[in-house]
Length: 193
View 1: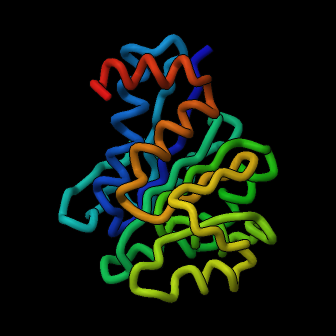
View 2: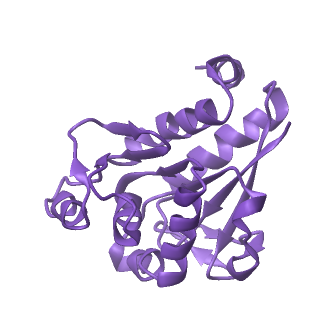
């Protein structure tokens, strides 16, 4: 049975983190025994990413129904490009809480973990975020996250990570959670890993 991931794209999204989800799930649609569809959404009809790539999301945010999706994916991004204005909106926090309460996987790369923290779902949950310049892990801790030092932290249905270099690993981990290791190995084979 096909599964569906909702990919939320805020303004100022980091392109590498965005493309990791689109590529891994895209390759799964062609070569995996369990194909995963990926549908993009945003508060905007056009998103300008961190390095000026423009993306046209497929589904208006107000049309999202959590029941239609099996997981939520969130790339990180840049404050100076409007990223936090989107991820800290209450409507997005409500969506995150809905996925969490439905026990559906949520994958957050880099500072996207702060959106999970802001929503309130990370109370006492092992998690991580970008912190090269300092302050972001303190913010996550202030939201209730239990800070870990690993590059990628998986706790039950929540995946958090420390930055762009983890993007493909997070996308593959989400694919594994939605299917199995054999499915991941098949996709990796065709992607030439």
